[in-house]
Image: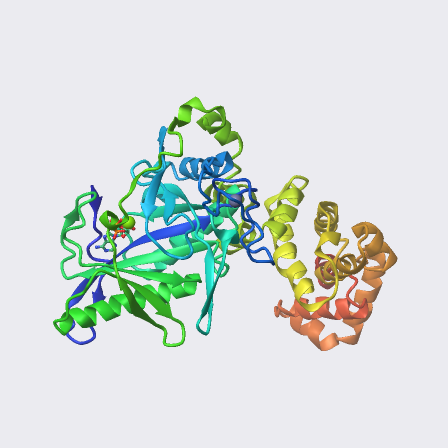
Length: 495
Ligand code: ADP
Ligand code: ZN
Ligand code: MG
């Protein structure tokens, strides 16, 4: 039983002040990043520069050819199934989804109807209905009255994930999409880039006037009539289209219009959805089991065993979040930064192996996520010049008081340009902080002599003047002193 959350998720009509309850379910396709296509040995590269180069008799549906199931593609979906705690199918069957369009050579698409590889599961708090495997279509482009079809994409493995209608606002939908993208990338099963169409989100949206019910699983009869919005190629657009659709449907209902079940597109210029076609239902596709593809039992195939698949599943995003928070004390923003940017995450994560205290982890995280990214933005250099030893040495030297934050930045700047050893650079370029107490004392004594009024005020209790003296000390040493040491010596001299 899925309980509809009543109070938090309603929209108030601008016109009548009445409450409406939006419901959203997502259908998300992702191209799987396998070596070859779903049913043939053509290279899986839909972005090949020359059109119609990665094609063969099988994916072009020549008579007499037979499809062979790509095991890697099946494994990819099974890994997602394990990650979302779903129920892995044991029986596999592929079905033909019949329809004609110039971008499907066979006039049917091989898909899974009755036996999806995964049922159930949950991600980002959203219940998942199913995930099945199918093949992508070709891509067509239209120039004037000429249409061109590129079959490089035809037959590329595609997974389709369907959620339950248990999303009640645009933010949750966007967050779900981002979390799925992160999961697919973490598992290495898809690049999942929305802009490139490697991941495609379709949002089913309805509004209902009654939020006061418990929805029985699979019983959508109490929900309003839904529309399905397609061609949403960024998360921002997913959110905007859902919000638009909710408002549009409320307006329509209030002006006595009937909502029709249809597919709508997104018009970027108007920031609006528009009607594309009335929705087919599954009867129209005349699904039936594909007689060309053997049915098989998942558990009979060694590579598909849960035990083997689990060995190939890396640390999942939510596991990493918890570890980075508990073990390193990073804040949520920093953790997301690393999750979204594997390049920096690798450097950080290798660095943590040689560091111990929370203070050091946080420093390493800061230098990588702010200083190094800043260098990349503003200067010429190579990120790959940075090694984990560079960062570990840097953090240790900062902790020892040998490097100021200014000095640390300068050292990183040099490594970015020309590689090198952190300690050596700091020594050669004179970045090592002055920490000879006797020498510092002399400098500070002179500063105190030159500032008798401030000394008097300090002694009368104006303790914040300590910072002023530290500042003077830093100035006198051109920033090479350790401010901590200066403060300590000043307190001694002034007492
Ligand atoms: P269809 O047969 O039109 O494809 P499905 O029942 O397969 O519809 O559901 C497709 C998607 O639409 C799923 O993500 C489901 O959660 C969602 N959905 C179904 N009914 C509604 C509704 N009334 N409002 C919003 N989403 C819905
Ligand atoms: Zn082929
Ligand atoms: Mg459907």
